[in-house]
Image (cartoon, rainbow, N blue to C red):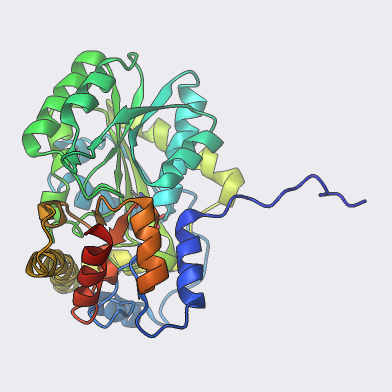
Length: 399
Ligand code: PMP
C-alpha cells in the first residue's frame, strides 16, 4: 500500500480541458474560442514590440540576485501609478501598501490570506458569474464566501437592481470582489453612474471594495478609462485594495507579473500593511520573480516605450472590438432573427453569448468550434479568417 492511496484525481479544469480537446481535433476548420489569451488576426500569440525592446535594453546588464520580499520597488511604484493615476493624492500621501505578486492570481490569493489573517470572521462577496478561480482562491484562504447577483440572462447585461439588493444585505465589514473592468466571463461592466451609486452604498454600509483589475487598457484601449471604477471609489475616500496583472495588457502571461496594493488611512498604516503582506509571502515563495518586473519597469519608466505600449494595447483592444462588430454583422447578414447587440455592448476579451450548453456541444461536434460550455466566446480567438465560419455555425445551432 502506498502513501497516497486515498488520493482521487482532481476535477478537470473546465477551461484547460477545452484547449486539450481542441489540440486533439485534426479537422483543419477547427476554431478555438476557449483560450483566455490574446491572439493576432492570424490566430498567433503576440509579444509586444515594447516588450521586445525592453528585453533588449535589459539583456546582459542585470544580475540575477533575489528581489526583496515585496518585489521590485520601482515596479510597485509604477504599477500603482498606472492604477490610481500619476498624481493621485493617496500616492502622494504614501498611503498605498504595494507588493509585487505572482500575476493577478497571486495578488488575489495574497489579499485573501491577508483578509483571513486580519479580519478572520469577515466574508467575501463574489459576483455570479465570475472567473472560476476566484471561488478557489477564497476557499483555499478559508474565507467565508457568499455571492451577489451580477448578470441578467434576459438582457445579457448587468443586473444592477439585483446587485444592489444583495449587497445591501451584506453585513458591515464584508469584503466585495469587483472586476475593475472587462468583467470575466460576461464582458458586462457597470456604468460610471452605477459605480458611483455602488460606492455610496459601500460607504454607508461599511463594505470593503476589492478590485480585481486583470484587463486595464485591454477593455477600451485606454488605461485611464479602464481604471475609472477605481478612481471613482478612490475619490470617494474608500480604503480599497487592487489586484493588478500585466498578463493581458502587456502580454506577459507566463512571466507572472502583478501587483497587490492596499489603500490605507495613513502612511504608517501602509508601512505596517506592507510588512504583513511580505510576511505572508515569505513562507510561500520568499520573493517574486525578477524578469517580468524588470520588463514592466523598463516599459513604464521610458516615455517612448510607454507611448508605444499605449498604442499596442489599443491595437489589441481595437482588434477585439472590430471582431465583435464583424461577428454581429455576419449573424445579421445570415438573417438571424435573434438579438445580437450584446456582442458589441460587452467589452474585453469575452463575449458571454447566451448560447446554451447544448448549442455549445453542437458547435463543437458539428463545427469543431471549441469554447467553455457556459457559452463564453473568447473574442481573442476570432479572426477575419474564421469569423464568417463562426457566425454561420452559431446561426445554424440557434435557428
Ligand atoms: N482575474 C481575472 C478576472 C482574470 O480573468 C484573470 C485571468 N484569466 C486573472 C485574474 C488572473 O490572471 P493572471 O494570474 O494570469 O494575471
